[in-house]
Length: 187
Image 1: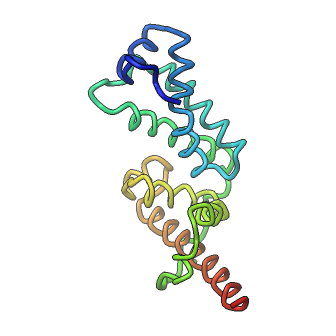
Image 2: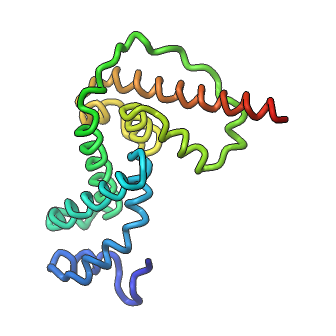
């Protein structure tokens, strides 16, 4: 959705702060695709992503008066979506965070088949990662958080974050290698 002619994003947000319900609906429609894109990266399926997106919009609408207009709205809202995703994941997987750190293995080289995969293929592979690994991979590799920041968000140590990232990369590599093996047998 595009904004109507003559209205800027800043004006839309200010009108939302003033309680204009039509403008809140417009803000929702304007940022829905952006929010859903982030939600789909962090959630295992579309229904969960939609739940996260809607919860994030509710949080954003309730906290809109705390938004600092000196910073980009997208960055502020992205953080809300990510934190909402983390909260949802945390509720669903309370007991899956405990794994032996010694099980981490060395990470090898990239598989050449990666050049043949498209974005949807890669997203499907990422969705196959276990919850915490998927979360940390997204936070570190896609959203650019440091291991210290991830540790603080998820209640882990920075070294645990590094191990989970390594495991995620290793699992992705294994899945890609399997695809490569299947591809080579067909060729």
